Length: 303
Picture 1: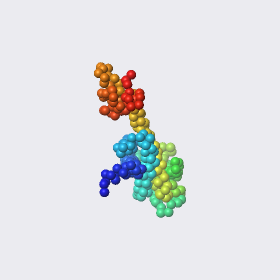
Picture 2: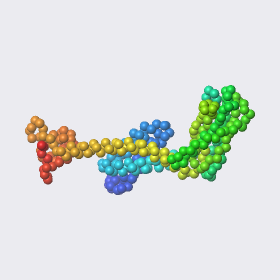
Picture 3: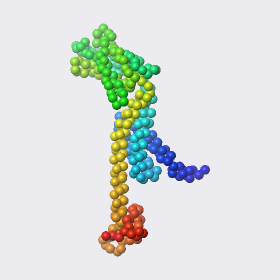
Picture 4: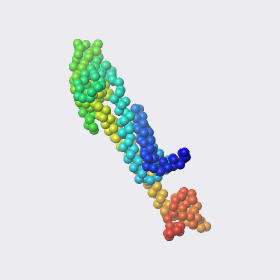
């Protein structure tokens, strides 16, 4: 089997383009995950546009129109792959236990029960925490659980006041609870302790509880991927615009033909790269720029 001949034949098929676009989309998705896990966006902003342009260019793609179509394909594929990779990990994470300490008080053992349910649906959840404080106004503090629910592009907030489950001795730790009924959506939760309008201590926000199906969480991360990729691909199309303008400028300069040297001698200079060109040359022997002709089969004359 002639591997080289098979490779050459495969490169001429539409499947080859699909393969390298999937390769670029896969790499770009892992770059986005790296950014997501580290909180750094520089990798995506730089690497994804460069990969989207350079990988097809390395495989021989030179047409700007095809590069633009490649960019649109990457814009569609990366959010899907990103969501497909992130969603299972997001749904399988362990329970978060919140704690936070400030000068006037500290909260600990902040959690929700159940954290995950087997059958998605509207469910009542029990939120609990322990508040410890030696502040003289501790008995006047109001304790709240804050639940954010995500549906499509909308975010709704539910703020429920928590009730004491202890004897009021805040110095030893006072337990609080609240039962909140939640629709089957993607949620995150946190806690806040207030003295009037002043925040005493807060801990927010972590994922959970989980009472929706896979598609709900997949859609959440897909939307997130679309927003981030819209910004990133704007950079790609800006690079592509510069690439197109550079090629266009070179083509215009090449079409003007060679310029006759000032010192005479019958030689010409390429207006694209400055190399010496003879009067009979139809293109630059150095850069390959084609010269416009004044007549069929004749090189352009300098004016």
